[in-house]
Length: 289
Image (cartoon, one colour):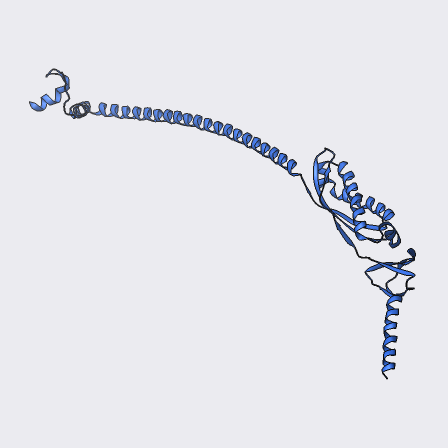
């Protein structure tokens, strides 16, 4: 019994070993090639369970999903020879498995290194043909589309991969250029502020001069109107006095004399040098008699 159990165990272990050496699985997210002594004999193995000949055959599997290459920011020159720092990324996947394996030995790192070089060259050429305004806003979409199409053709021919998309995440100015740009912007804003300030002072002087002119005009018109009103009042008063005088000259003369006494003798310390029989003391002398 012990001998049979050992034999059965040996057969099971041997079967598992043989199966592990002859069977292999390709997942839905993978692409694979079959090598026979290092030569590709099947360049696109479908997903599923497959057989291979141990020792003679070797299986190379690759990720068939869309991969992302996030490049380090690079410095490029625009058409005006202005430097910019560009941060970009690329979406790619394996298109031809045998060509990808032949070009990169199946190493994703090698593929990323070659693709990085292609992207760097493409971005350098595209930025060198456009101005700063065009690469920042004006033609950014067309730049990315043209670069993706060109890079896709080269990558398929050289690496067997398809470039799905390429995008620029951000475009910055180098620190030295940024400082000069900020300084120029600051100078421009200060110049504009001085212009606005001078225009404001000029406008304020005009408003102040106009206000002074209006003040003088208003005062002159008010003085003219007051003189006219005063003249009319004096004329009316003179007419009234004349009318009263003609009605009773004796009373009017008496009333005017009282007014003269009140205005002349109302303050202490006033001195008059007049004759006692002066006409000014007419009514006072009559009152004394």
